[in-house]
Length: 183
Ligand SMILES: [Zn+2]
Image (cartoon, rainbow, N blue to C red; front, side, top):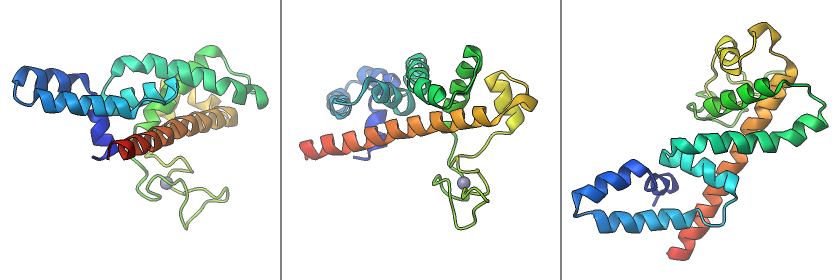
């Protein structure tokens, strides 16, 4: 089974619908167990992301925010960025929002193509791999004036996206190895 489809088996809505329809209940609960099993061994951070992103557990969003905020601390310290706590919260919110956007149509999410800008990034998405929101909209989400958007905001934002990307890689490889066990 496709990993993303397997994750979708953990959707609370799916369980409720199948549970009340009777016939398919057994099959669905087996899938649910398989899906839950596929997440065993993941870090808490990656696990919360899997449930939020692929299984519709919106209540995990707060945990996702908390994980990001703990994971970004060192990066901010090393680079000596000065950020207001509420600005960091806004950057985290915006990063999650950006991450779940469709991939960039030019680089297909890679962040680079044959046509690079002078920083070696995709000209369309500037290395982010996603369809970009306008800076004005992002700053609204972050809660800052768009004129005060700085390089440090941008670097923190990219790092947050990278962290989520590593969770997603961990999820996929975890599922693949667990599915291998079953097969
Ligand atoms: Zn791109």
